[in-house]
Length: 525
Image 1 (cartoon, rainbow, N blue to C red):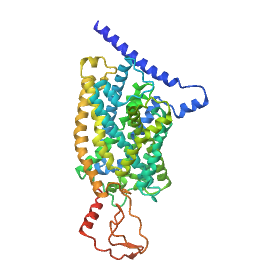
Image 2 (image 1 turned 90 degrees about the vertical axis):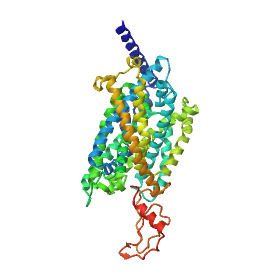
Image 3 (image 1 turned 180 degrees about the vertical axis):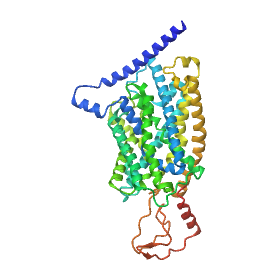
């Protein structure tokens, strides 16, 4: 009798799950027609297949961070950099699997209650609310929104940092103003269904940039006197490790991508395959650039800064700019959804009304990118303080608590596979993830990344015009301006030569002047 009852429960659950998926497919297919316009829209604009999800996951996971991974290698060393990429890639895939399990569990339970998600996008904080209650919802909402907010900030900073290597007539802060306005156009993209062509193009662009970094570095060869001294300091070591933690923590938008899928049950395998592909981009590029330039990367967080300017490098910069625009949309779209639900416009059919309502979300992102333009160090800070909880600790704890009772485990829509040891093995893995990320990621990583971040503020200051920009060349026969007289964060020599002529000595600076000059040369490291 017990086995028959259990079989009946499983059959009901599978039926409910099938009904849920079928209803979602029907909603999407209601919009189909045989017109050329609708077919073109379906090809370029409206997607929900497993391929769309794979492109979205891979494209979102390896955006601007690709350019900072060589910087992390210069902090970690070659061996540790490779090991941490493999380790955090596997850990990120595991927690993405947990998120997918919890999403399917939540959606199945709600659809048994006849809840219709026809005009509603499920988000991570709603999954936590439905499975664990409002306190978990509040914690998940706070961490997720803050992470996505700073994730969007990082994309905007990266845009300004990259374009400067093509056109340095404008400083990076001015470029941030310009790209902030450009990225604000993402308010017109309704949902993750509509990223089909964008996610495909984004991955193509990232693939080109990754292999350009690898090939260009190998062709360039090692610079004279290259040194590979890492690891040298604990603060640098854990800063680099948390940047890699951030790299493989891009599944904060997993629930929204799953909800855009016609068959969300396939997501867990899709994310693993996306991570494996991403590793084929990050490992060769980071290792090659570090091999070629070594410790020079410690003062150049953007790998493009060290490669000579060629048409191929310019192409990589332009492609990364477009991709960062796409990734800005990926990070910001869940924030748009939260804001729409808060003001009661999430069910609105008018795209223009929703776009206008979304604009206030972009303003704080724009402002924060101008305050903290520290491309590279900000990744590690966000990784240790926000990514560690948002996509590692909270999903692992939520899975453990959701299925803590025997009844919940018996009625689970998708029990753990035998490969990981069923429920016992899953519990042990989750406990290890929580302990590791809490101690190493949040503890040591938080200390190191915030120490480095504060040093950037002390060295360059807030609202700095041009972070890590080289000093402009002096005209022949011109004396250098007294430091820091209006030069922002640019270091100028007290005495030097220009055009072969000996420059007259500058006026003797005050002791405070010497202190500021010495501090600047540290570059926050």
